[in-house]
Image (cartoon, rainbow over all chains, first blue to last red; front, top):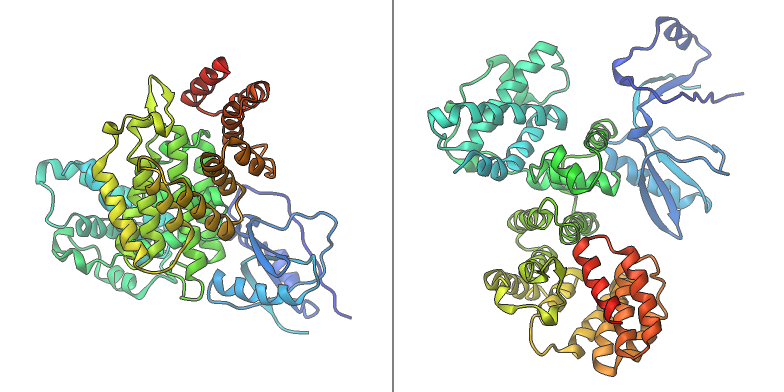
Length: 114
Length: 393
């Protein structure tokens, strides 16, 4: 079985990018059963896409949870945010109605595959 | 030229060039601010350099290099900068005398500031800061928010641009129409805020931005049309107020209209019309122009509003069409259109409706509508005008 572990954090004043991963946590991330991890930029860097009858609407900021649940995640590579939004848009238009996709830049991470 | 004027003139250009070199808005802004401060110190004594923009860019770049060296965060910067870091700072006077050798990257900067992944209010603030050279305090004052709030808004937007990777680039052709529409919407929003408020002269800022855009993309009819629209509206600025009260167009003293600005607006409108594309700003500019003639051609105005309403689906455009229709077929015909609109929150809807009710002789309804318009009015000149009408109703 594969699992995704989702980490939630309270708002913070300090710059995440300037804060290193604690050594003890880094050691855990290095263990073989961790097949990949990513640390995300703060939520102020987020952009959310919604499908409004085939028209994709962009909003600044994270997806605000209401009755929707977290259904999945994609890891993509793009040259800049426009590239990432284009890919997200394509995926969104194939997903079922009501789905939203939040695009967040990855600060650092490591992917070893399953 | 006084330093203030140079600052106004060169800020956007210098900042854009620095972002192109340094790849980071905050770093570029700090460096530009330092360079302008140094200029303020030296130029009065030494005299203004032959190429002020070049001097400012070079000085700012030297400052940024110093700062980066101190911080030793050299990784990931452009090769151009890496070379400079090896060679060390150059005296600003050594720079090219020809302004054309500095690339003008203001378009890249405008498209970055008006990126749709940023909140609209952030787009507006960033554009005024980066291209208009307004200070954070000035922007805060113009939008009636505390300085600290505006400062946070700007910082957050700059961090998003950096962290999310919003490109510093003119969008490719297939995205250009949508992205340009977003830029024009920001400029027009700034202009309209200037009209309603009258604090910092945002209308002048918007016209300044419009001129810069028209210079950078001279073949885009919607840019020319937006600039024409703003000039034609702004030309009536002085006539629009009398004794601290709003004056309706028909009662305005035409001698106070800025004819030079009207001529410029009309010439731009002509240029835009030869491109044979009918965008929303072209229609609005054409309507603004028709409003300046006496008597007004209400049939043509109504027809243009109808085309505009079809293009935009905007109920506010329908409201304006109702005003034209009322002139042609009487106030009841205009009211029939207004009754179909859902604009209860919009202050001009109630003043428009009140005016048509008054002309239709429906006095108590008119009274009620003036009352509602007065409750929603946001400026004192508007309130005085409406109070006056209410007293007469």
